[in-house]
Image (cartoon, rainbow, N blue to C red; front, side):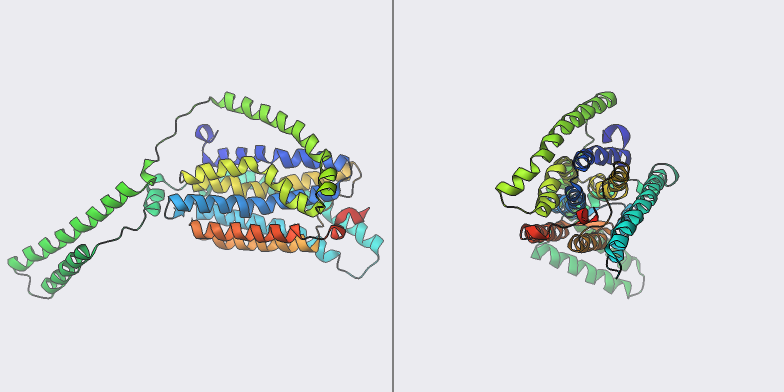
Length: 384
């Protein structure tokens, strides 16, 4: 799809169709009154996309490419939208800490969530208009030449070559400090040419050894309409699977003695993000980090600014207490996740170490939710 429509629109469509799982699971769970599962699966998807999926992209892409670059302007836009999403969860949490009657807090939390959901949808529509119409250039992919240059792995210079470079530089400096006679000028030119030959040789060896220069234009195997039809068929199959997935949650928590928070935050999130995980890593390894970031981080933005508000409004319509009030523990995890990712993507460059940091962070969060007490599963279901 991205070969037909470009990295920006292709990444957006990829993230959209990948989030169909979360939307279908959320609707089915809401109809059954499983508000807690809806909230935990949404929060888990945001955390998994930002830490596990993006971290895997940075890690595996960085192992093959020395350093990868992407559009810093797009990354900053992503960061501001993620901050807006976290604001929408922090306010209901702070509101529920007020010293007031429970009935007033419950009613106020639902009203605040419904109003916030409407404004989040407005922000998301404005973001799409900003990305696809008014400021398309800010989201354009980094040119291939710049990506290859950043991906070049440092070449180790042997002792003899380093000695030749030092002697040539010393000769050039000595000649520059003397009178500009024809002999001195010729000597300086010879030294300078010698340095250039050595540097060009190092660059050529580096390019021959790196695996990045193997990136060629991919051939289009499917037409645009064939790709769309295939994606729609896949979505239909996912809808059937989502019904079985929601129906099996209670049996899973009982038979394996797991908390519903762990199932929603970790298991459902990993299963639901399998498609994004694979597609994002595959393009990251090919040094297309702009597209990978659009899938991983863009998917989190879409869940936070579109899927979550839509489910909140659907809950409002069908009289289910779906709100933007998450548990304090989950709210803290979301805040730290967004903060960490914003630090990493802010400079427009990444490497395998930063990817490992994100993966390890997700692992620690997974352990914390695995140890999450079952009797602590009291999220917004208390808003009944």
